[in-house]
Amino acid sequence: MFTVTCCSRGNPDFKQDPNRPISPREVHLFGGNMTDACHMVRDYIKAWDLGGGNWVGEAGEVHDEQGKLVGRISYNGQFWRHWTEEEVKIVKPALEIWVDGRVIVAHIVGKPGPHAKVLYNLNGEREIRDLTWDAILRHLNQQEALYA
Image (cartoon, rainbow, N blue to C red; front, side):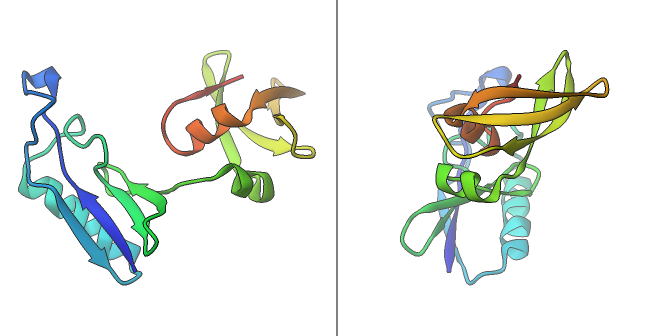
């Protein structure tokens, strides 16, 4: 079981008050089918005629039975898993990083430490950079781009 939060805020780009909701806050309970949850989010967005700038804050948050954040459903109906530092160190997912103005796929390599070693190929050459775990987690959790 998990819950999905649907809510919105005004978009200042359209002269809406960002401190006021555009739609009512709703929390939906699901029994394990993330596809249904993603469709429900898109239906909610469509019903309230929301734009991407309205789908902010806790909108789309997915929590497990214990209330732990496990992911987010974005405006386009895509589920994004919420990564913890421990999970990243074990699973070592691929990263999309910006290098010299373009996106490069990189991989976390080496033993866990205060920084992560990130390996990628640039113009046929292997490059390794140190990045902080905090920066990697913000990137994986869809909060910001990652630059090397």
